[in-house]
Image (cartoon, rainbow, N blue to C red; front, side, top):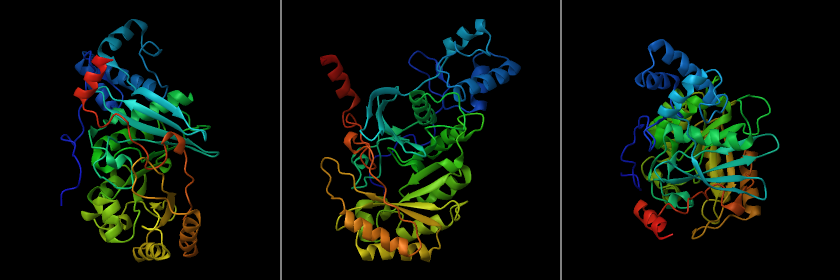
Length: 389
């Protein structure tokens, strides 16, 4: 069955893309790719290897945004780098701060596509919600992002650039493991990460590199709606925590709210969860479950959820998410009493089922609310508006 929605016509990673002025953006490139870029630009093999190591450290550990600040590169050589390379960040179109401290950025790619990221501060951690695509192809009916068309995959540079931009804002350079506000990353922003696997993998490798951004894989979670064929590969090649957007326990309801279920059903999905590399009681799989009034929130639904987790012997916890409303949504949030009762049934079975506190609702930054306002306008329409302005 064809998955609903538009598919990026170039699903594999795009190579290093030159900026409008022809310079190559080094953000998102591995050490080896940086070395190759420097060699192609004219450095001999020994110099390219040395400079690549220095540039990597300056970009990912020191947070450099230009070559003039790179003190370990000889001053006369810095203009040579600046003429050929750039160290990019996503363009910030809008930066909103919620009354609860949540931050949301509307960002723009070099080719004029908008996407969003969110930072959620807590007393003991700070979590950055990172996007993997411009738009989404899954059409989940409860999710505002799901009403968008998929424009394209984000590159590895555009993914890791979100983390770097958040570090810029929070003043957390150079990289250091202690005392960070940005302590956790969730790949739960716009898009399905496993439909952009290679770019997500390459970006997260930079984030997890001890000489790069230096964030432990234990503090990174990748969320999927259930792209079953890619789940084992994600565990083997990335190895971060897994979250699954389950949201229903019957075929009828999940087919409606998560259309991908028509391709990869609940049993197939849970079998893949049971086989996920590295999953154990210390690294449990998280099941995300949005609470929709009279749709998936009955006592019977809670008991069936428990039955399924036990059937597949899953090391699991369940995050119960009160539905976050958005304009035109066809669902209502379950009552607090209903959410509490659902949680109690799951807890009584020995499975953790905390209720996630909504954050950033006032700036449309809560779970399921992300959507760039400009996404439905074609590039031609935006160009005409710019001319008319």
